[in-house]
Length: 230
Image (cartoon, rainbow, N blue to C red; front, side):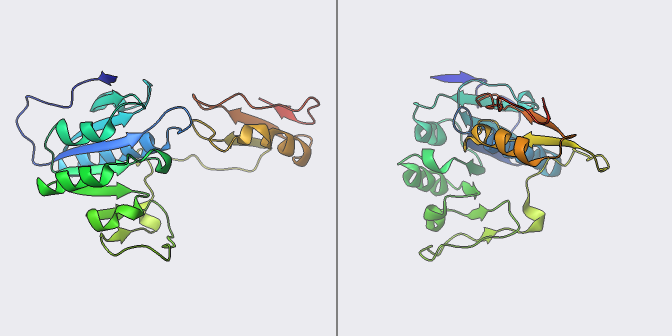
């Protein structure tokens, strides 16, 4: 099934039309969507681009998502069909979970590029490098696999982290409060092991503040707590 606002628009054509395609939800988390929203805001602010999002996920709420035209596609739906049929755009950005990359993605990329659309991968899709226009790695380092093919340029570095530019960190001061963030879905199940390890390791006057993501299971608190756990 497909949910959300349509990806078509009756407004005057902008200078650049962008479609961002990403995964989110249970077992995936919110990282791909969060990065996509950072990109969407930057493209709109810097270039006046019309940005739309195609999200393969169950319905969810996310800050700033309503600021952009978007559509949810259920995880069992044909993502490739939506990529090539919804709308003609100048640029497509793909921020996909590796385990859910569609089998026909290469064909879809070929269709888009034949129509003059540029296709950029975010943090992955190295196997499709010959078909892509750019691969953007949000990391300060990148170690290419030995069998990586020639193709699209790969960009990475300290200035490539996709962080929200509107966020201003507060001044850090030493203290005894520890914040644990394991992502929207806690895909590595840190909630089953970290509470016990931190309970054993932190000073007795420490406080552990644990944030459970919207798709994550509640953490397994130790039966006997040495420290305060929230």
